[in-house]
Amino acid sequence: SKKISGNAASWWKYAYNGVLEQRVRPYTWRYIEQHRKNFKKYCNMYKQTLLKPTDTELKLDLQQSEDVLSITDIIIARELAKVELLKDDVDRVQINERETPWWHHGGSKRFKDLEIVTGKGRGIWAQLSPLEKNKLFDAIGYIENYPSSEKPKQYIEHKINFTLANCSLSLLKRGHEVLVLTLAQFLASLETRPAANAYKISTRVESFVLEGVSPEHDLVPVI
Image 1 (cartoon, rainbow, N blue to C red):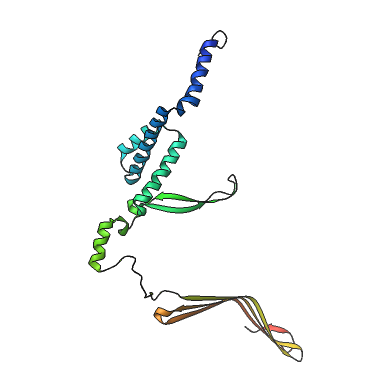
Image 2: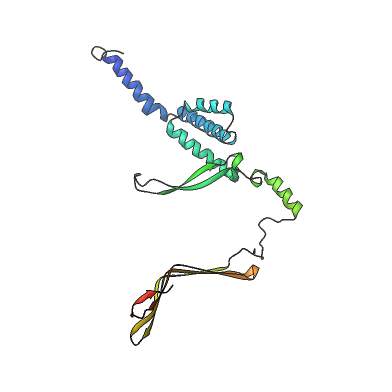
């Protein structure tokens, strides 16, 4: 390093080169063209690492490509690779909806995140190619996307829920309560399954109290 005093020309040259590298050269056509090639190369290479996560040599090449890109370029390239992979093989990418923390700038917001599904997490059907799927359809006589008029027996066509928070019924005799029934959180549900020609009724109550009058004319619990 040189002292500022007595080396004005060297420091001016240093400042000039700094401005040139940061403000001018990044916007020349040659630099933009080279940056575009590096970005596209990294994007394609990252896509390959998603498909082959155990390839060590590919990961080393990926790290070398990161040396010529900024952290912003790397993040954008990785997300772009996931989007392109989603178009090429929809079964390999899972779309998850997440929520930013409440302390995040601008408050809590929901966003969609793309997650790669590895081979272990994929089912047999997802690993079949379109040609293999069509061969399987022909073998079993299945027509994809064919509208079916029959509904499965488990299909619930109607479901009706009834909720009663609190209820009290009193039986009076000459203006005095002789029997009091109290219900709390009474729930009832009705489900209809036309395909199975069946219906289901379910009820639940959290509290059921029946009180009757005693010989001393006081209400005492009966149930």
